[in-house]
Image 1 (cartoon, helix red, strand yellow):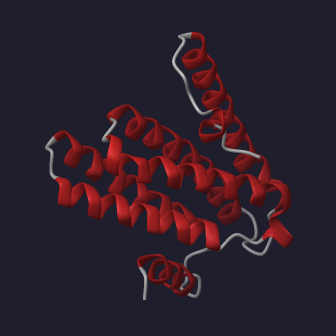
Image 2 (cartoon, helix red, strand yellow; image 1 turned 30 degrees about the vertical axis):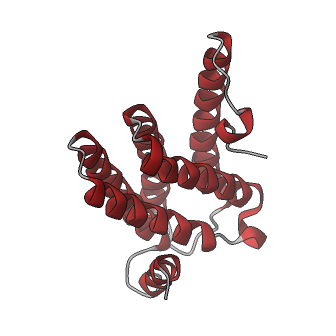
Length: 175
């Protein structure tokens, strides 16, 4: 069994526990953030094995989140999340080769923004009825994704303005 499928299965198994689905997503983001921080420390210490293992775990969780998206119910937000997870996975995977602390920090910043958005959704879900429709909560997630996209576009524009060649496709999170 590959790492991806084992984390996806763990995510699916967690969905049967007592935690709400939104709380489970928050917990998964906490795990990714923890692993990326550990990878950042490993990069600084030139600890190749720890860097590799923690980045692999972070990418596996991101893949599990991505594979668990429901496009029928999630619509445009699910597609945005899919693109976000694809871009994040690519950035985290690139750290195996680049060991770029700035990319690591950017990933951590975006993960924290998304975690905060999911925490808001989770708090609203807990205050209201857990069975309430999730459509209104898509606004928080979409807002966080749009903020990340705006930051990505600003960063891409400033890099291009500086004369450095950048593959714009790799910086853009949405199709």
